[in-house]
Length: 97
Length: 475
Image 1 (tube, one colour):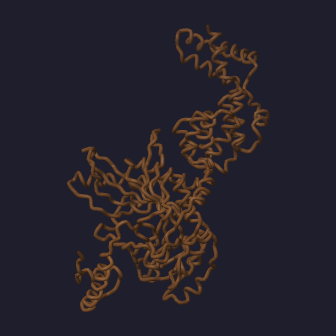
Image 2: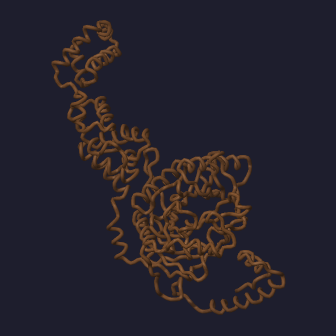
């Protein structure tokens, strides 16, 4: 049924999450993740035929707020803790796609 | 080989709400950087999104306007990607259960109607803006736009030419501004189009491999980008090449598309339901209240204009290009009781004058009632078409009302047949050569005589009357 995660899978997942992993860490993580997959496998053994999938654990619905502007300009406070700021812009390492 | 083009469009419309989709920040365009970015928008730890009722209502309006299925329960998902214009590390969007599914839009191309089916429309948040000018080798981030509500509207791949794609985009633009859910400002990015384009040999059932042209912000660019892309794909295939699935950008300066990323670099978004947001429930009283408040829609108005005013399919489509234009036409048509004539004047003389002055219909110096009165004066024989144009110029310059201008400028069509007869006699006496030529069978000579009479009357003679009178005199 279930296929165990390979070290390559672990490396790929880490890359997607932008987490740098050494081979030793990848191995340790692989074992931990496989334990989680065992738990999932146990849950998947439950017969859920005829039960509609749920998007949330509770059967309650989103509360909505009225369309009104309630926030004020607080960029000075927010930018006081930013590593680099110029002309009101947050500066980040160059990103070119 | 004969090729067929296949196009599907994804359109991002910014919803015309006052505040953002998940926070109470203002969505107004053009504010100083980051002055409209709250703790939620810049993703400080511990903040939670709270959904804007106004944004949901816009989506309901749209769904009703295109006859779509509204998912009574719809769900927000996280679309994961790392890019500093969305500091959360994900965009809140809707994947499996969007608010709107299905629906259709009618377009008119070359006078023929066609229906384009829609796949879906879902709510999501816009990203901020990255400024790549040099900030000491760094990128500047403005998060004012982050969290602005978007409705992403996805069509089926049912368009077969750039002209159809443009007609669809225009019809969609008309509709979203008509029902007031989007300001339609393309320069400011309120209406952005992605085009999925592929080609296949005529008769082949399977679609070819598509390439997606991103972020087109004018109808002209949409047309140019698709035309270039189609030519490029056909040439590549005819040269024995293959099309690789890719995302491309259109460069307006060169008129070409170029690759942004290939399929191998495609993102793995790992969508999953957002645990911070509960499913959204639309109840029937809300939907019915929104339905009741919808204005008459362009498609219904087009049918009514054809029925009530006898205008063509094409004219009806042009006249419903915007709500302001449609209202103007209808007021003018009702003022004169001449639908077809009103359509000709609105789409002809008036549109030309507005274009020349770079004015919108709402800014027209000539009101619909004035234009209607002018047309009524043509209909009752007071004015010829030519004289009416002079009166129109007077109206445009603000010289007063129709009848006052006719009176003041002496533009009344000659109604006294005795006066006209005198002019005809004079013209015949002064042009014996033309008379002779006409009698010898030269039809052209007759037109020359009509021209002379019109000239002598300073344009005020009724052309039909002149024709009749000349004919009887020459027999």
